[in-house]
Image 1 (tube, helix red, strand yellow):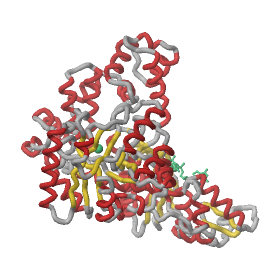
Image 2 (cartoon, rainbow, N blue to C red):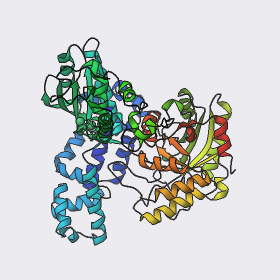
Image 3 (tube, protein in one colour):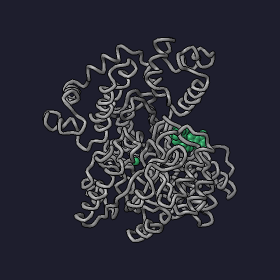
Image 4 (tube, rainbow, N blue to C red):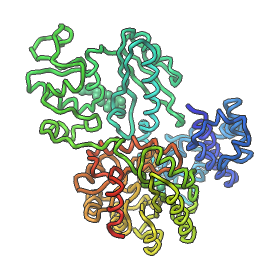
Length: 589
Ligand code: DGT
Ligand code: CA
Ligand code: CA
Ligand code: ZN
């Protein structure tokens, strides 16, 4: 884990504990802001911690925070964090993770009812004793019960953006551990699911022992659960989330690597369908290969039967009469019939993306200047980047009122004049109010090259209200993209549940793009929504919602989600040429 991630986590946790204890809210806000800035920082704090001036030059880092950073780099701890942690039972922090349970309520639950665990909260909800709390009505209690059920159902899965970097670093480590070793990750991670239950890794090497040892001794390992000759299981520390994730390693024969990859990538439903198909063709498929089905009593690999195919996935698919099916499609959602008919979609790839259409600067809550943003977009090979800072209602994010927006547009146009090779569009991320009206009037919106409209609050609306709200934004003639349409935060907030089919039909009719927000905490639209949009013919945007340089790296998760929704490149506005993009944006202006 990088020093930055750990410092950001400790500051954020300190802020949460102070809030529960009812301490000064300006100090709480300062810690939260510093935590946000640090987690998006491009430089490694451990490298620059000696240089106090450099620390103080970071936005949001004052003397007190600089002290804490230096303390952490020197000692590996932040004493203030530890002091607060002593004063609060650890389960109280879990309570803060329940969406909609604010620190004030958590503090009350603890002091008034001695509730310090999720289980205790559940009991108080069930026996109704929670209603004794001041200002706790039936409706609030019901809302908390729903949120608790949501937390319980999603709590054991890890977001892909947390699991992927760990899996990749382990794969690199295993490949370096023995001469000629190969390692790959499989399972839901390879299929690009938004969360994973555990991480499945396959390796082959002549020195199986060396690879297994490297796996069990990796620095991320917190606990070894099993250590066999070809199978090991461990628990890993998962990034800056403070939680653990299980990882399984299987060492397999190189000549059967394709069969093992196919089996352990899954999904289970996809595998079941493939095995049925094999059987119908007089073959049998397992994790060791595709074999002729001779009806023998023991498994064919045990009897030394030569497989029809085993070394590569492509060979196995081919012998089953199928085109190679990309991992993201392997969910038994029609991909086998499509592969048989040669009708698999021409899926979008990261390299197709050449525009970022949702990015924030220091004018609102981003950490890059307009110019730095433009240079980063150019460095990543993009022809276009849209500056879309927050609108006026987003006061915590320093949203722009009309006067500031006008100045900002002028600054964006000035940067655009100076930049060669990348076009900088003047845009805004405009709040969609609860009733579907927008945060700027039409005259103001008409000044912009591009408008992203997003819901940021009132995210517990009834489905019918949410549908009406989002439809109004989709139908608005000056809205180009609806940003993170449901507002969900994975494992933290359920978000809106609009009628997706209705939204997709409207988006197709009006040519409004629906966004896949690529941040791994959002991935909103989710895969099944993307599939509905593709089927309805609606355009899709894949945006990184850039607040710092590193946010561009989340693009891969957005693209994986798009592929899981069967999105072809030509339906994604970010993959269009500059000319086609300009024509689309100009269609109603
Ligand atoms: P996860 O970890 O819950 O996000 O989902 P997966 O898909 O990674 O599932 P996991 O880790 O239990 O197993 C990895 C793959 O191994 C799975 O996608 C298919 C295969 N697999 C595991 N157990 C079975 C099984 O009992 N039958 C079949 N056909 N395949 C299995
Ligand atoms: Ca798994
Ligand atoms: Ca597994
Ligand atoms: Zn945004």
